Amino acid sequence: MAAVPDPIARLVDDQPIDWQAATASEAALLDALHTLEQVRNAYRRIGSAPAAPTTPLFQWGPLSVHAKIGSGASAEVYRAWDSGLATDVALKLLRPEAAAAGLRSSEFLHEGRVLARLSQRNVVRVYGAAVHDGRPGIWAEWIEGRTLDAIVENEGAFAGMEAAHIGLELCAALAAIHGAGLVHGDVKASNVLRARGGRIVLVDLGAAGTPAALGQALRTQATPSYLSPQARAGAPRSADDDLYALGVLLHYLVTARHPPVADDAPRPRAPELPAALAAVIERALAPQPAQRYRDADAFAHALRSALAGPAAAAPRRRHRRWLGAAAAVALALAAAAWWSTRAPTAWSPQASLVRHTDHDRPLRDGERLQLGDRIDLKLVSDRPTWAWVLNEDEAGSFHLLFPLPGLPQSNPLPTGALVLPGRQQGRALSWQVSSAAGREEFVVVLADRPLPALEQRVASLAAARIEPIERGVDRVASVPLAQVSLRGRHLNALLADSAADLADTHHVRVLGYRFETTR
Image (cartoon, rainbow, N blue to C red; front, side, top):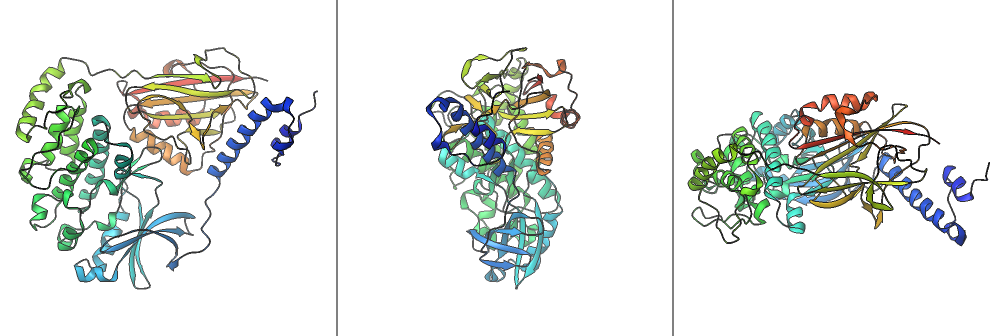
């Protein structure tokens, strides 16, 4: 048996490697090993338990408060460490002067406790509400992600379809909040997070309360562009005001501008926005409550109807103004009959596994790979795409390969051509062949919209700390899932739990892979 090169032996033994001492003849091997070492270390950091920061600003009950991340007229928001849960949390502390502004601590705590009983994936999870050192506070899950406001500022307006899907998720969030008898009170782009993995989350629930409790304090704190005409006039807050604010948010997502505050001012132009979606947003922004949607479910139904129409229905004249509410609704209804005679525009993403060194040739069934080969998923899509890659080996170990926390690529993936798992710190990452024997089963799920059942299932598995590692393959078969006999119990259970999502063949593509690996 040939002697194992020292760098390989040290890597296997988890020992540091002196890369500077490498000889020129080993350059190619060492480059591959160096990449593998970096990937291993990255995944190890991802999988390790979070550590509490060392020097807190102050202690609030059981929470160690470490950083202030925002403040408003009534409250301050901090990042804190919950030693009981061994995780970071977001802590919102009520300012002492807030009571004088009309927001009493008893109401603040009551609404926090109501919110803690809510369980809806698009509503930030509230862990509790209490008073410590005379300061009422609410603490909730800490979410790694970006606000929709930051995404628009950095990347520009959203495509109409993507904005509509975000609207659907926020409708679900508001339906849960309103069903609990509460009003959020401050729906806006900076209070909506897109978490890593693509989950849309409505945050800042410390502003929420019963309609009677949300008076002048919130009217003066809320962003004027998001206030309904009735709220600006001083009327008591209601669930309708949240829905109006959601209409403003959708308008902002597709135009990168807020609508004018004046009721009779013309709406900004929205080039290439489908007429049906424009009609939905215009109705949400109608001056009178009776002209708007009666509740979040009705708003969601209108968005789904708009999504049923082809994207080609978007107006192409760059200088066309948005239609007035009545005319736009009439156009949408008239267009519905025309759309019903034609099938929706088909979504045909192209996906294939390729060698990292040869992206032009897809890997085929039966093709043999060598230990150390680096494999990528090559994807081309004309729509924003949500992707999940999962693996189970012969021993029953279940692995989430994509998306992974800590990596820049996350759902939804942008339109166009891209390669997964992506890049980190300027270096391309790949799944590397590291298993020399046994069976490997993969499932790749692609969708042009969020898949709540699948996301919830994956999130619960990730919470149980699925091991995120690179996996090895030897034979690659890309065929419809129904033609692959998956034996892995974890994969089969996940597919069964997500059956409602995966059955939508117009918007979801599922590929199953079964590989036999040999030495």
